[in-house]
Image (cartoon, rainbow, N blue to C red; front, side, top):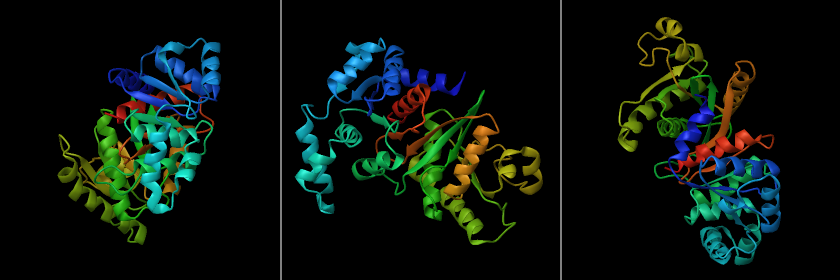
Length: 330
C-alpha cells in the first residue's frame, strides 16, 4: 500500500479536526473535498464565507459537511485576540496589533489550535514557509521536553518508507539540537508505525575523521542514547548509532566492514543529517534520482501539530499533509 493510502486509512480512524488555512486557493478546496468525502478528518476551511462556499459548490464538494470559518466574523474572534495579546504582551504586543495580526488566516488558525477548537493546521499553499512557522513558534511553542522545533520528510518508494531530518528548518544544529531532532523523529516514526532505527549521519564513520563536525555528531549520538528511553518511555528499545556515513548506515555489507559492531547493522530507517545543507540536498537527490515520493516538511517537536506545504503543492500533497497532521494530533 502506498504511503498516502496508509496515512489516509490511519487518520480516518481518529476523527480529528484539521484546519486548512487558505480557502482562497482552489487546490485547498479540492483537498477539502477529498478529505471530507473520504472521511479522513473533520475539515475547517478558513476564508471569506461566501467565496469559500461558492468555490466548494463549484467543485461539487459536500458544503454542509465542511465548516467554513471567516476570521472577520467568527464568534470567538475577540477571545483569540485577547489570548494572543496575553501570549505576546511581554514581547511588546498591544491589543491593536493583536487584532491586526489575527486578520491573517494562518495566525488565526494557529490560535484556533492553541485554544482547542481544532486538532491541527495545514497551510503553505500560498504562504511562505517563514509565515507558517513564525505563528507556530510564537503561539504553540515546543512540546514538553523539547527546545528545538525541526522538520522531517517521509521518503517513500513502493513499500519502503524512510525518515530524513532535518531537511527544512535548523540550519546549523548543535549537538543538543541534533539530539532533539533525533528524538522528535523517533517519536514521529512511532506515530506512523515505523520501527525507529536511527542513524546519526556524517562524512565520518566511528572516528575515521576527527573534525569538529564529526565530533559533534558523535556527541549528539551519546546524548540520544542517554535521553531517549528515560524521557520518552518508548515501548521497546530504540536503536541509535553514529557517527556514520550513509553507506555504513544503509548497506549491511558496508556496515560489516566499516562498523561491524554497529547495532544498526546497515538497516537504518531514520536518517539524521548533520546540517540543513546536507539534509536538503540529500532529500532532493533521493526524490529526483531515486524515484522516491517526498512528503514534507512535516514539523515536529511542537506541542500541537502545524504543518507547512510547498507553494508548488498539488491536491494529493495537501491531503497527505492533513492526514499526517491528524495522526500527529493523537
